[in-house]
Length: 69
Length: 210
Image 1 (cartoon, chains in turn cyan, blue):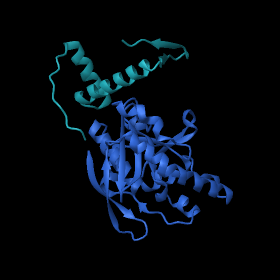
Image 2: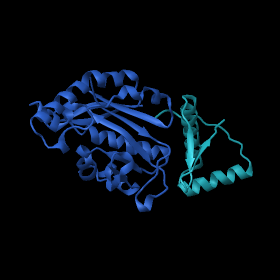
Image 3: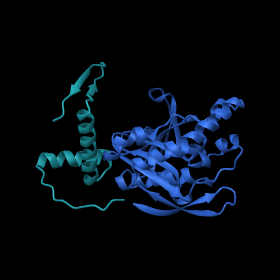
Image 4: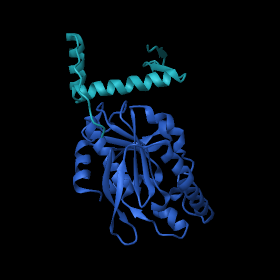
């Protein structure tokens, strides 16, 4: 595996709470959650840059396009 | 990452040194198109002409790894290759984001998904039988699945792993690897979703393939 670099991350209380909740729900470490977030962000960013669109479909099968900055 | 591993010479049953690596490039994809695909297509044609049962005729004759070249730069995807005796023996693409378990006890828990796994055609017994040759190596697929489980552990997914199996490979994943058949997926050509729980993955790594 590639060698890993260390960084310090400053989060608000609320951001830390969300990170901890996700960590508990997914049974992943906080680091693993943030790595997942980075992967997902890059994937979505690349697909949107290629002209793809991202939709969420609700229970009624209605689709809403998600805008990502 | 480059690691020395062992596969097995099909004829002598002796271990053979191989290299497992994750620095896959488009050159490897081109190698599959040049060296693998013509053999797969030739064997598939012979199997069809000789009336081989439909379920043993390879389903991956149309695969083109070069389509995946843009994915080499995306963190959500990772690739592994294996080389022995100067030739590419296997190639695998993994997804490490957006997939979760379908076994009841694993629902919602993230896992590593094997998007593509291909062994060189000269390592696939039915293909070589169709061409009147002996396969060259065994255990290539097993070593790649081991690498996938280790990737899952590295991601913090505890070894959870899943894939949609082609019909010709179901027995390998279920009987040899010991994965659970969860069900056919209408959203993916009705292919069988096979999954490792953390316990199954640990057993597979510790005890090896059946």
